[in-house]
Amino acid sequence: MIPIAEPHLGEEELNNVIQAIKSGWISSKGKFIPEFEEKFAEYCGVKYGVATSNGTVALHLALKALGVSEGNEVIVPTLTFIATANAVTYCNAKPVFVDSHPDYWCIDPAKIEGKITQKTKAIIPVHLYGHPCDMDAIMDIARRHNLYIVEDAAEAHGAEYKGKKVGCFGDVNCFSFYGNKIITTGEGGMCLTNNSELAEKMRILRDHGMNPNKRYWHDVIGFNYRMTNMQAAVGVAQLEKLDRFVEKKRQIARWYKEGLKELKAKGAIKLHPEMPWAKCVYWMYSILVENKFGPSRHELMKNLRDEGEGIELRPFFNPMHIMPPYESDNSFPVAEELSRKGTNLPSGIKLNKNDIEIVCQIIRRRLIASSSI
Image (cartoon, rainbow, N blue to C red):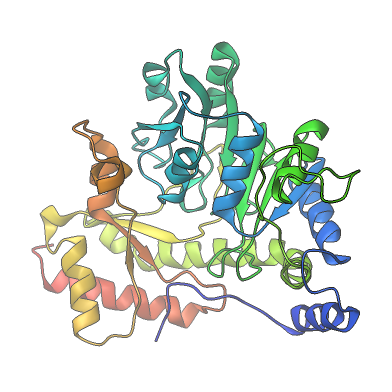
């Protein structure tokens, strides 16, 4: 079995968790929570970190702290995991979808401005599959229209835009530490900001809206969005390894690029992009299967599954606008094409060169044997 992804945990994580258990602080207090918040914020070049119970609630917390509410609209790429749009809906606001850029798959800045109305409150750029968005263009739009930016960096720990880590550009920037992410706490998330007032507001909302100076006094309706000390203990250890994990992800991408170059040259597939201004971390190494040359993405995945090759592939996300909660008659042709052709290949940090060569060999065999190339 070659899985799509799996966590890479070691003695450091175990030792930290043992420390947390021995201390007795296993819930939402303990030394590892502020340590993880401070160190992860510093890693991303941001002043304040607010740890959360998962990445979805990080997005919700950010939007609530920024005052997104009923009657507001938030710009969201249609091609992303549904949590991005759901967080907007949790605020009783409306997600407004934008198509993808054909070259690097994230939200297309050229198509944002046409979706802005008097109701627009914020933009959520998503660094899809580990590739950064074009943040200069998005920030310029936000400044001109007085909009907030909430970066969704759930899939892009350590990625860089023009030499700066993603997660430092928005008013609030959100990460996930789910088990398949580049670093993990099992579940877990983080909001980052340079605004001290926003950070404090998010901490209060995270803890049931409790007044920090008056125990059990609640000035606002909040949430229980707290990370546990045991989760943070894992996160502290994982963070120490993040740069090594990123380099391994990029090495896996290089192996795939070499192993699949014949299929790329023949036009059978397109490889995962990396723009000159970006450092992609390839959370998932992804390809587009060009079905005009042979089997479609669906057929390729079915062949591998049915024939028991033991290779786990996954399709791209479905665009939001075709799914029941957000279904619309609007067309987003780039996102639709990417979703139809996109395939995530095994991308776990534990994979070695031989694993990648096996995957490439079988994909080559399946595509070449079933087509005219």
